[in-house]
Image (cartoon, rainbow, N blue to C red; front, side, top):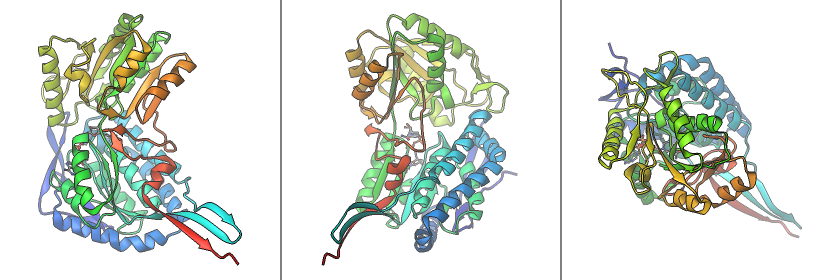
Length: 471
Ligand code: NAD
């Protein structure tokens, strides 16, 4: 008997007329069913969120902070069950699923320390100008499948801390853990503050066109982001778009090769490379290129590709069939272009979307593998000689999400960081997310930011109030 999960609308179980099968990508078996919501369920969720809004917006900030701390406790108490479910529906190693729960819990407690007080711009002779940050209303959160829990939590927390209510829609291929979290949070937040709905490809456009939303917070591909932006324009809805990337790493000749290679291996292959800020192009100084490639090859050869619950697993299956086929298509193109692919790992035979992690040896800049976001366990490494040239090549992309720089030379790192056209630059460490630092993409990698105080502000409308009581 396959378990049917429930949506959360107005603090209660909600279902739909149809269901989506959710597949374990390691076995291709159906492991659960999620409601396939349409207009009726969406309307019900928006109405529940609208009903809950006035009293939640009027709830003192300190009480909303306390609710976030309580949410952290609930996630922690249920961490193991949630992590097991996440691995089952997503494929990622269990250790990474547990880490995703820890990240979500940490975001709850960290955001709970933030405040957006009234800013007093001037206050002289009885005349005072102040800027207030007020909640927008009902927010829609649309999230992707790669880190299903974190990406949903990163929408829920800032929305509700700032006094909004929210309807969240996780991706159709990995909705179950977020549905479960929706159930658990019913004991933490008043009914209607957090609503979780699920559905297939048709539901996203219904959400972005719905007049009940004041803001859309979207994370996903650049192609879908454009559609979201077009649809949201009808109601001039507030928008945050966290989109795709083709992140470069710039590896200079003075680094410690084993140490940097280990960190870059994580940057490129963590979560099977299915990360918006994974390193997707690795520029290595020509003086160390051969030694660096040899070390990366050794690391790839030593990483176990297996089901997410296997002891010592480094890489699970690719999350879904469509992504698996997109990646195998890219590798076929690379082979047809005569590129050198290095695939030293064994992968499980039989069912499951397992793909051998792949290094590509010095492909040309205009090859598909360099130009497009792979979003999988494929890393092209290319040689460079000149700093100005490598910065120009790194910046020559429609994307501008994150970049990493690897050197012992602080002045060089600062100069390169200043010249990279990306929203984030991380020097000598990968994936350096912080709940307190803004995160967002430039160019076609996005619009607006998440995290930190600026991320919170994006869930508010600013209001300047001028009080003149001059006598
Ligand atoms: P996707 O764009 O296919 O889907 C994202 C979400 O949008 C899903 O919930 C999907 O159901 C929904 N959706 C699909 N069509 C829609 C439409 N027309 N209107 C509204 N919603 C719609 O992305 P994905 O395949 O789930 O995720 C991978 C992509 O997400 C990659 O490009 C990756 O780089 C990007 N991503 C970006 C960030 C970031 O913070 N910048 C983080 C994670 C993933």
